[in-house]
Image (cartoon, rainbow, N blue to C red; front, side, top):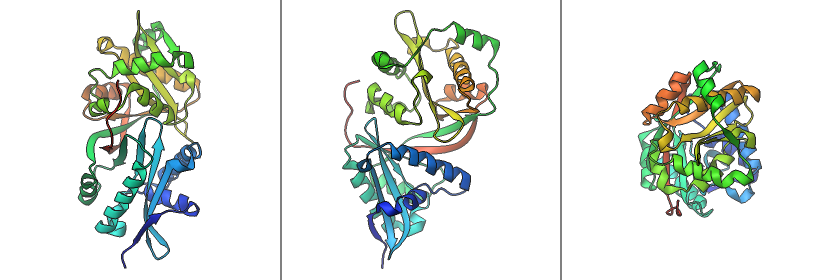
Length: 313
């Protein structure tokens, strides 16, 4: 008999999460960290914002997929790299269909998933068959140990005026993010899909938010850019969730100053490393990070399925 596709009961949630996160060549330590991070995230969202579907042979859970509704009107899909080999192509197709329908019922505007670049052609075929398109190849980069920035970069960071996040400053942060999107080469296909307000909500949910680690770079009349730093769940790592500069503020060395300030904040708050994700096609950003000492750890292909058009920017 072919495997049966059905929702995963609460009693098997951890097992399904482990299966959803499976990738070849993944260490047990990395998997454990991912599971703990997602448990922390899931503990803070309503139960109906998590959907899990599994393929069962009798009572045995062969493989599973998970959908997480996130602020910012996006549902993140966790799809294991061995989905097709674990249950067969037809079963994998039906499981992915059930997951997408269940995730769509949460009414996000788009679905998002990450795959290893070398995942099977069959899995790529499945995604394309469910109306997903490849958005970008992301490089995940780590700065450890954190070097001391140059005297010039530290001096520039010290001369800049920084404003931390607060509810009273929220609208200015939204406007700063909106302005940094103009002419951006970092996942430019996302720009028409989400508003700056939605992006802010998404960044807040990615890791542990602390208002003093979200900073505006002030200009004479309006912010020149922003630096958004979040703690990685369960690790001594601070993530650059987002950093960007307005179009007129680029090419002046401010990117190096933002990284210098990120290093300063990480050290002051007791973190051992910085990490970030960058669109590999954004060559200027990749060079900036590499010159600062960041090194690529892994790559992921980002896939999206658009369900509805965004609101006004």
